Image: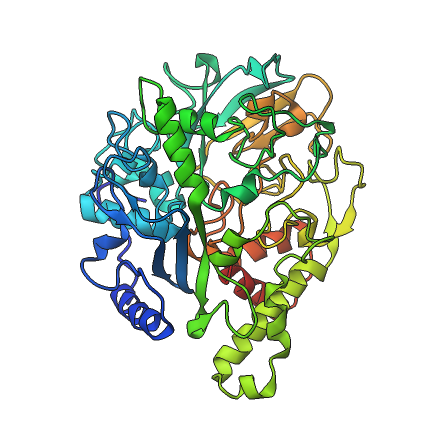
Length: 511
């Protein structure tokens, strides 16, 4: 992105999509659509606004309509700590967790905020909404990681001194090979100055009962006893943050408040309690798919209501198979099929086929820490997508711990010249798959654990609301759903047919 305030032109037809979606919602009996009437800015929930968050919110996107549900009745945003600015930069939790973006933040939304506010919205705060605070903040080029990839700067301390309450001496060194933005070198930043900057996507704050659910009493990805919550004593899922640096909701909030919110004072216990209650009440998923297809029609049980009403934590291989809620669409009765357009009928069948491909298409998984090591499955091991995305209805991992898919580490990562590049040298045992010297854009979980074996490991992403929150992977390297499938194809040489590829894309667009 060149310097100055220019941005890509808005996507054509966006207003038409909003109006069309409003008509569709009315026809199908949906309520709470934001953006169908009034200014386009209705989609954006800003800090400190005096609005009512209803029990049902529907927002259009390129693949249909996303629905967000809350339990416990409507919420007044004025005075609520999730929605009120928490520090001097003017941000609130809502700033980076927008309902139209499945409680995350999509690149399209970020670019729109730059255009509407000329780069003055709090999400562009210098501390982490720019590539580095030392850059000229009025220029779009200084915010390119956020504007082009949807990434915030995450500053981690170096060297790591503590993990899970125990002293840590890292078994690797870290050198900066490339620093395009200045936040890993100079007199303020970089390993020599005790600070390492990486860039990551905001994770969705929704469907949290699934992310907090624990399926095992140990961490099979590390071969360690599962840690317990320091507040409750319960086992921890490890699924909240990309690098597991904050293990429960309280610690996650305190981390966000002190970094993204730049708060000096700690959040009060009352604020933590209110934010926790709100977070746990939010469920989001696609409600309407392509061609106006209601995802809870003809026997299917898509949409967020199923997530709200179901138990969390079930392993799909022994409970309800993952995404089998769409299986009924593969054999739609002739009398029902006659009421559908050819496009609606084929799209439903494609989603059902995609779910079957997701569960049944096996391939060789190789050189992936957290899968091939140290779990003992072997290298390679043959399995399908549900080997890791195995939780019923949700598709996240029942087994605690982080996994390295190669999205941030060479030679598997895509070329990302605008990312910093680090050289990791193992001082103890070499990495089980990369050897002693590793080149990576983001050391991931290793910056939390201090272990070279954890370089590149990242907490798996939630698979719900995907249509609303592009780009994908923790580093935003997949620009769209097609890019997600194509990365896995390149990484593991799966051999998807053109039909299987499209069916998987359609499935993900329906989640």
